[in-house]
Amino acid sequence: MFLVGGGIFFADQERVRFENRAAEDIRAKLNNVQGEVKVKVQPSGLAAAWGELDTATISANNFSINELPLFTEPDRRTSGKIGMLQLRLTDFTLKRLKCAELQADIPGCRYDYGLAKNEKQIRLSRSAIGTGWVRIREADLAEYLVKKFAEIKTCTVKLHGSTVWVEGYGEFLVVNTNFAVIADLGIEDGTKLYLKNAKVFFDWIRADGPAVDVLLKTLNPVVDLKKDMGLYDAVYVEKVIIKDGELKAIGMTKIPTKPTSEPAK
Image (cartoon, rainbow, N blue to C red; front, side, top):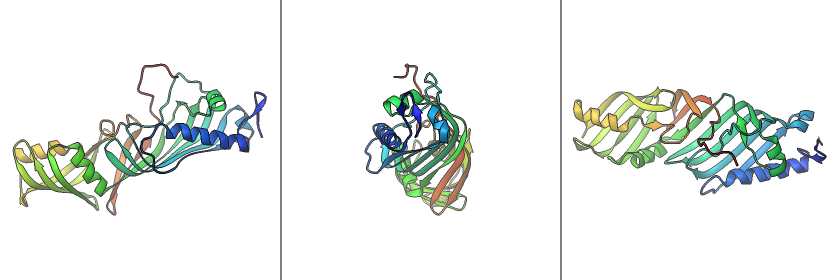
């Protein structure tokens, strides 16, 4: 047990109470929660007495959200320290895109220990750079493209090897047609995934010229992590792996600064 300000914090019973309350706080920021939301902390021995944690793990599944549930708030106190913040999110929809899984391990985070002790809430004040990845299934990517692009009326996506195959029917500025695009997946600015080295077919005839340019301009970027998913600068993609009908975007991660000029409450 650890004595803090005349009380006991991060002892077993108090730790569980904190974890449950913190999970409720995170859950309140999510929509349509069908699964579990958990917060687990591992105190850092005697250093827990002044707010040090070896790890803090936030896990959630089967929910939707319009933006990240966690931001850094630089005006908050930096009295608490988390050796490694772990995010484990599965089967969730971020804006219009359903993600199979997102994992991130972020070291050296700071949090408002006084708020955690008194209100049982996690409010981060600093984030270092960590590593992580997001995994997206081909069927979910196809559904997302129809939602994102009004010109695309039907769509299927196949992910195989290093190749992305997008097939469907579209009503574009210069042509209404069945189309197929076979391309590699590239990375731009660490936040955009786009089709490159593309071969385009209209009604199964190889196409080129202005109509192809219009189609590719419509489709690219396929995924914009900032604009489409509201991830701000939380993820910087360095590599994409395509395997077994899924794409896995791997790179640097951090908890971004809260996007508001309003003072923290």
